[in-house]
Length: 282
Figure 1 (cartoon, rainbow, N blue to C red):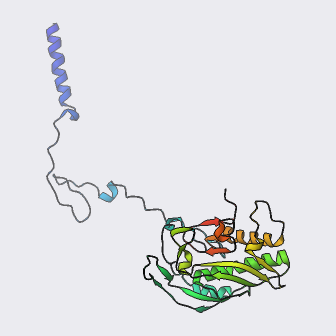
Figure 2 (cartoon, one colour):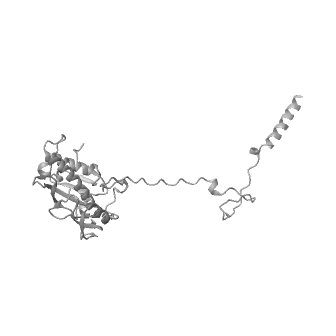
Figure 3 (cartoon, rainbow, N blue to C red):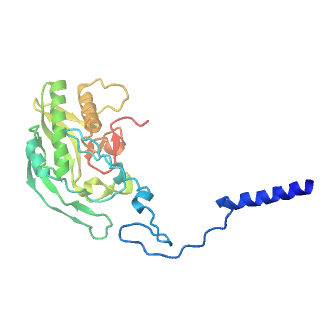
């Protein structure tokens, strides 16, 4: 009886195994087939799988780049992805129309992009103007030759100057004494780094003269202390430089806080990278 039971169990087990597909032999390899024009994939036996578009999830579309919202009067570079690009600035679209809207008078200028003899520095810029008069009605000791975008930034800076000059001194700025714009060279303190002056994309300012005759000089009046300045001239220099930086008017606003090379002037530019030179070093 025991032998019969064992034989019966073996027979039942074999029948059960044969009834389950996972114990069957694997299918033979499929033969190569061509893909129909409608995107479906035929099997060897003629059956069609669903179109690939529905069988495979489509890759997600790349996210649209985030374009920083630029406040009115801001011309600083806001793109962190181009910080290591070295070369003349790109032309500013509709610059002439925007200058006219801001009430800026300029004269066309030319500063061809070139590499000077015995030099590896590229200098010049494709879009240069001579700045004659801006919305602040401020004269310059010498008409600055700058990129068109720098002309826009200067016009924006003039509005800050006039607002703060009237608030602090009760008199607007009548003249700006600038120390230079175009100079094909490396940065004095950082050999190997090309200066924005090489593209006329910068201006150095040493003195502001008010309509009432008062003169405010960076060398004489700038206060490098951390406490609020006590003299009005020092307060004026600090507030206009910080507004120009904090409101993104320029990419760089370098003052005597930055280093000894700027003890007698403000350096203002529209470099592709940013630096705040209006506060004590931490």
